[in-house]
Image (cartoon, rainbow, N blue to C red):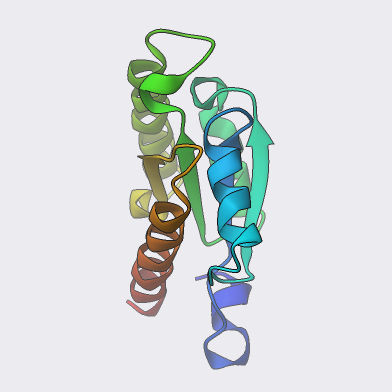
Length: 139
């Protein structure tokens, strides 16, 4: 368990979100602009395409103190690659294997396609992931 989830007996888990510039980032921004509630411990990092995320970045985030990493993927709407969904799935598989090799729980990584108008979906994913990470941290 990281210090953020343990400090003070129950702070929200820190979640790093890789969000794509053209597809998921507008949905994440819409959630904030609409004053939808999700944890302030969520940190969003924009990337051009979800298939370009390196598994080592995910491991680094967990080793640096994040409790979980969420990939807000392009899905089939990617402007760069027709097979972005397949490639992003491969990134997740490789990252989970890397996490296992480094004694990290692979459940600390999640991915979902978040579109430009998917604010409610994003908030729902953040709440569900927060709850899951809280359970993982206490187990």
